[in-house]
Length: 233
Length: 331
Image (cartoon, rainbow over all chains, first blue to last red; front, side, top):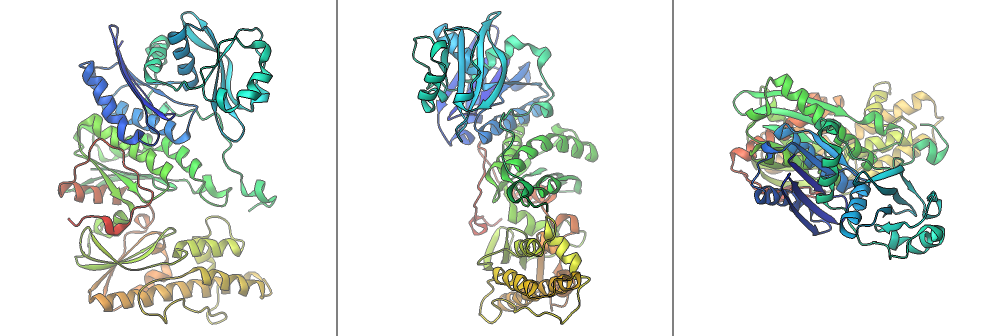
């Protein structure tokens, strides 16, 4: 399988090409420069892999949760490329990508992934190793650190920015369930792990470009006039 | 040329052919989505755009009986507008063009509006004066040639369309109130209320509309608040806005000695304004009603002109929420 993957959901911007033989990837921490960097980065990884867009089997992208605008940039780029090249899309969770990164880089097999969602909340997912890849237990959700559901067993490692922003709250709330290893709070989603997860998921899960949409988790973003004032318009 | 517009609350897609003219255009308006919020919620606008653009591209291509491989370029609104909304159209358009190995052109939204009357069978010829009048802008611009825009005057506070919407809200009309206010005005009686024409006693072509809104509210509060009072106030308000725009257009034409006025933007759909501006001693051009508001056709057209003039863009997604019209280069 030949996959292109991209992610712009956080302060990092990344792209990767994954083939049966190799992985070519680029990753830069460049807040606010994603719009300038992402296409040249994609061009560069394709060139390293000596592949054309037309030779790919599918395009994977970090579909969120994360910065709303960043997630939409990745979705828009992926949709545009997929439409141009008649390729299907594979949206991959950014939380899953962080879990997979933690597993591939440190061999940890149970992680609690949290990304700061501001307003006192986090995007949260509980991942563990199943059949060779990190998979979600329960559902991803947006919640306050003190509302995190307690795992049914111990020895979990924290991953993601929530573990620095809400370090104290999480340490207290989950004390009995954490491993002694310090949380990987500076981890950011990375395209090469998005590509890995897309390969695991298989082409059967790929979607038509217009059906591949962002996952925000936070779906209430404004109050209606009625909610604000108690008066209907 | 494929054109994609996502700068605010309408998703527009169109295909313009420099030889055959406009081939197809499609629009999705988010008015219903924002209605219960009483105004455009930028994040919701962006979330909707990303669901609409691709289906609209498919529909537009089908209507034009074209395939993507037959396109020569892709134009998208690069600004001004809501940053999140702009980025949706820009990301899709830029990646699509890159994937097809064809050029992309980031278009200035107001240049698109200003050139919209050129899509008509009987287009204006240059030079002309343009009145850009919408919910976000009120501008009088001298256009000696395409791309060279000299601002003669602009609103120092509310845009004309914004004044319509805000006044409608103060009078208790539903969202978006501007068109409803104009509709209500047709039931109003002339001469019951009179609002001062703002800034007409001062030299120059600048506008100010926020005082009119307050005047209308005060009149309403001091009235017996019947439906007829409301209609009378709406009538007088619309008359004051239209009259002010008329006076400033006349002044701009005299000042520049241009023979032609081009009107563009959402308020350009206002019937009273259209009637009144036809009294000017100049040839007056309007886009068709559906191209007064935001649309993809004007973006495809402006993009086609810019591409023909040699516009070339790096593989960078351009989105400029603030982008003065005068920064454009003449073509």
